Image 1 (cartoon, rainbow, N blue to C red):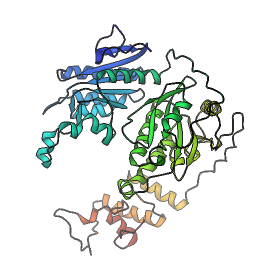
Image 2 (image 1 turned 90 degrees about the horizontal axis):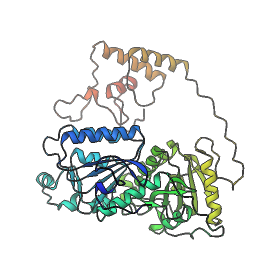
Image 3 (image 1 turned 30 degrees about the horizontal axis):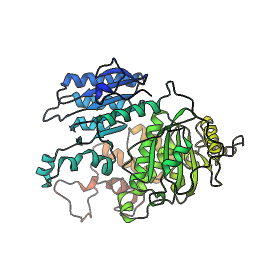
Length: 477
């Protein structure tokens, strides 16, 4: 890799490139968007067009944001840039924040795949003065929205000490996620064992990946997991590891959210994912339950089940409770290598390379735990034929479709559908449908009790028409 140039946006690209536009980083094409307080609305419109072009050409794009506080009337520029970031979803998007960025410009920064914040920079929706006026809380700007806050509390940013460090990190990320002129990986020692159980997850990833290629993301947040990019056999991959050195690798809300976002990023970029699992499960605490750990776990499982890139999970020691499944279980589409018998690094790497070459599976083929290299996969089960709807339900559904689009939540049976059609016909003909009789609850002025959605999403007048009684909170529909 070439020597790192001086910090700042002009120092990021190779020699001969301006502060904004298309250039190269160590020979790899990159688009750079540099904006600061002096940037006009026209500058931001040009920046949005540049990001759109980068997305169309599948070129990584880097934003370099100085002081960007839009004030009372920011104009369309920040919104255009935010839309451009969202549309450029198939390329790596990085934003470096070096000043105070607020309002729509902050949203545009946060829409990137990775936000790098230099110490002394801030990123906020509402500045300290507004927060103090609204709540009476007088907070220092750095405490409210500084680099340390976003690196440790919100998990939004990767914190670096200065612009030189930001340039170095961006160049590392561009290099490790693209394979232009990548040197061949060194051959590992065939007798070298993987690190023992309980070892820092970084050491395990370093042993599995090509030499010195792991670039860790957001190391100050979600200590139970490590996420980053690297290479294996010269191929760019995403890497995830539970960290048994932190509470036995138990996953909490932050760890689940971090892993979900990273997995979706890798899937969007088309990067295979390698996961190393040594975890005792989920953190069993009330605040985790109240914070929504069940929902967070389901979101991670969904991200795995819907991913289309190859994923390989290596169980290095302990995989208790739901941790093994959530970090890439068989049923969620990953190929699982159980190396609890402590194979050598070379053997495990060979198995990973073979698994990646096999492509996405066993999310669809359910091959289960991989055999050693050369072993045959288990046969895929036969797909059951689709269920045929009952004739009465088909007829009712046809009538509803003829009446026009209607959103119905729940699972009504045939009789309920017939009753719903009757109610729909009455409401569409202009006849009143009153469900307020017998409703003794207090309602605010202007409230229409006849159209209140129940806990299962059914409006009360529909439920009353079907059941003949007011719905209870335990009615499952």
